[in-house]
Length: 374
View: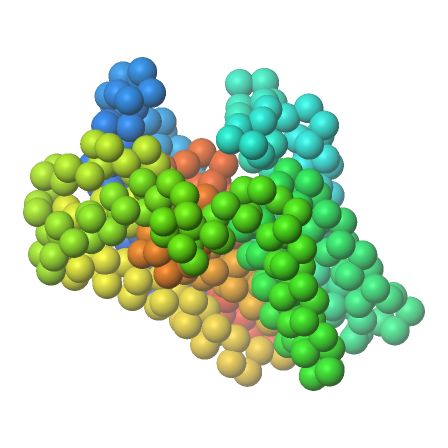
């Protein structure tokens, strides 16, 4: 039974009766599943790196209430407030990404993390959703105010963002940002000839990355020819899927997590497969698909271009990240080092995803004519 009556005019009361509770429930389900899987996968990883066995579990569980607060807090905002926060956040995290490249710590050949006091932050994770909101604003301004060259500003911002991501380098994040921005540009009215040209540029960029960045070359070669290099993690992940079968070995009974270095993060989907089986894996896929499709269906009949483009960008980035993680675990594409939203262990990742879905919930709330102040 709801604790809010329909006559409740408080901000939380209005939020409860206007937010998409089906999507909210699906997101909470992902958080719950993630809490179980982190508990299953993290202790073995923590012991291997010399930490207390439940150190990573405690850290993840400490982040969950913060993530929930971010998600609810952002979803209560009006579209105008979310737009302001997204645009200001874009410039803040753009600056932090630049500082990361200059002063960040290099880990496994990439410079993606920066220490800010006690926090170890990956600014590019937050750059992704805030850039989606900024790009949506620019595209919508192109249509509403001809004095503003929204398309050119958005293109310039995209070039800067991609340049910084490739400098780190982070091809996975670059791919997600590119596809997200391109989807928004397409919905905003990109001519079909430019769609074809964009695809050509994307393919050309991938070829250049293959010959420019050694780690990209290595991962693509290993994907095309498993004998070309070290496929230890992929082999163990596929072994986990094989061991799990339809119903899994049971909670805590998995063995592959004991030797899989990134079992708690990039390959948590494999842990789910071994311990809980194909049925739970399909349930996870179904929840992600539900959130994406439900959010898009909420945009049917939406007349505000900014809201439409923002939701398109946010949900595209969210869905792509999930697809990339799960496809990598199944060796359907080269590994990208990308977490599974709300399922993988994470600090910056889970905060950024909470920000993303908070914005998504804010934009998909029920609104009445004249109630949206943009």
